[in-house]
Length: 430
Image (cartoon, rainbow, N blue to C red; front, side, top):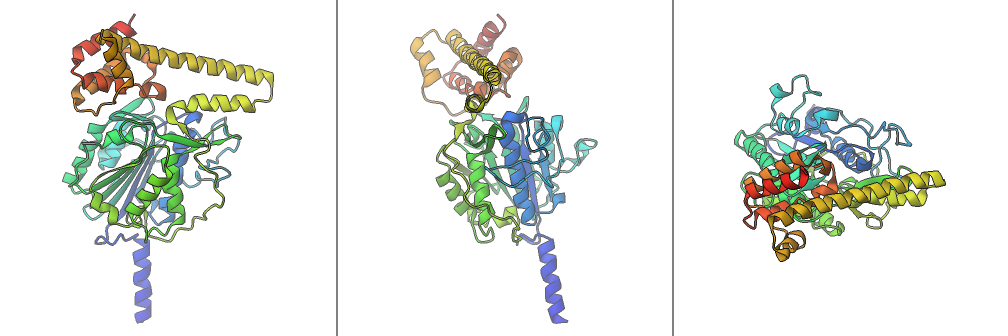
């Protein structure tokens, strides 16, 4: 009888995915904000993240997945219904919940899901939210494009201050005991730098610092797109092979940081949390994931996120078998390069209108990239740019996103927002 009681207790602990924090639960919010075949890697990253937390015992009712879901059955997919995250990898798409897809992958839905606002999501997607409480551990994994102080959601974007307000609200309402945030995006450090308090029980790591690109990796010749992102690939391959009940968050951070030699992986918030075990956030059941041997070196073909569209076309050109295909690809490449020149000229023209001093123009374009302090100026200038210059296709054009640091530099060198608005109007409406 005593043996049966002990066995019964063991089963309850496993099924409840106990975190060791007063019977608290695990929750996971996994988000890929982008769409289109060229951004294949973002949804592949998030599908892989789902497989990890699912295999480690986090129940599907506690996992919310947001992704456009336009990759697995895309007409360009040579293996319909299958998504992989590394060369010759196994399918990571199977079983992934489709909680919010298509147009429902947007900043407001994300914030409502994160903060548990069920009433606002009636009739939208699955309606699932992070319905966590004071004893629970929450894991958030976001993957997409980024720029200073923003991350992209298709044709929309989320401001860092809005994210911080949501996390602060969660803390005030005791919606978690500890929260872990892994963020894959260019300039992702800017979402937390000087913003994330150290006393609200949140630990965040990012693919890059506040001033640099993150990198794509694993170009696949068959699919002619990149399968993963270096930072995401590193923390997930580590999670696949390690015993997460014995690996601390700090250990995983240091391994990911060392192996992500393409950008500076950063950590923010309450660093004391990094002494906790990874299992306390990603699930503490023994994983059934079979580690794949001989994984290719992700650095061999790693490329800056903003250069991915060019790299894909250049690699596809080399693989093209007919002259017709080569001609079509060359036309697309020429158009893309011409578009990038337009983007660069647009920003240069705005800067030149604001500053007649050639030396100052050069400093804004090529000098130190400033930290955002004047958020009002930057957010106002960014919103004006998006509204007035649709040809820049912000935030879907990652090359244009890479130039938003110039707005930061102008705001941080005492350029008035009114003058910035006038310059944007002059350049984009004429």
